[in-house]
Length: 212
Image (cartoon, rainbow, N blue to C red):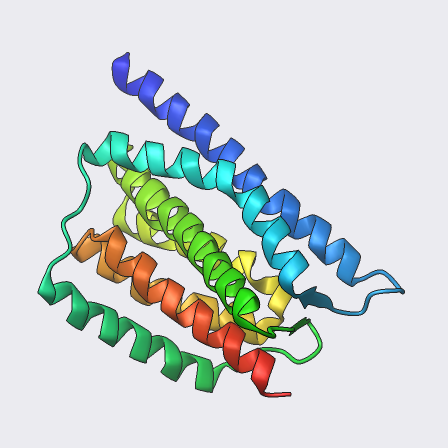
């Protein structure tokens, strides 16, 4: 009975968290498809609004993660190597699957813009890693699902969440998501994934802003 209640709670929370992730994305996609706005513009205003909207969901995910883990992770020197490898692999994947032109533009100018872009990258990376890796993979494992589903469902969802960036973005997310998922399933260090994901997001935003 207790396990059934825990499973039901997992499904309900997952549905609510998924809706919170998808609704803003659907709204942005609708705006991008409007005749007056062909692309999504990422600038100071967009960064600030997105950060503020994402904070409640991020706080919920942090609480859920700490509740399941029971303690904060202690960063080790070995983690630096893993971060370097993950960032390098992400950069290689970005060369193979470059971002789709015209789906969005980035406008970063000045120190304030760089700070907002970094916070935006950190919040988005933390939210995605805490949900797709910490919450979904751990939750599906506890629910007793087979390994292929524990790996495949979060990965598919993660890739589909990036489909608005085009098929190139979808394939990039599929590749890096698989790498991150394998890492987490073998070594559940969510802090490593958050840092690596944040570094990649930050560099991608800066490069997309400077390379016109």
